[in-house]
Image (cartoon, rainbow, N blue to C red; front, side, top):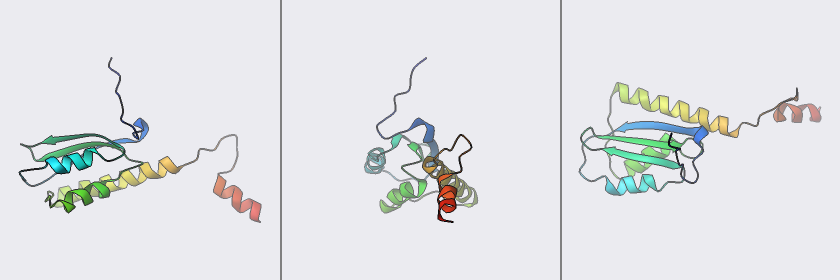
Length: 123
């Protein structure tokens, strides 16, 4: 069994995979290079015939809005419609959960969470 080698800045526990559709443009080379150079990006695959970008990235460092900003800054027209909007909103929701989980500090041994302990100490 082959072991996956992760890039620097990619935590496999926070790895998310996304598919983004766009409307046919000729040259996506510079955009793909920009996306591939992001810290936390694992993989960028371009399906030219299907007009799709498949991305794998660390959700604790990058989110879908950052990727969309890069695409829109280079005048890439994204697929629009009810389903595409719903998928992007779902990606945003999942990315927010991944970021929240990355910030979470685990608690054990019947100790209260840090924010509750601070409130108890003040009173």
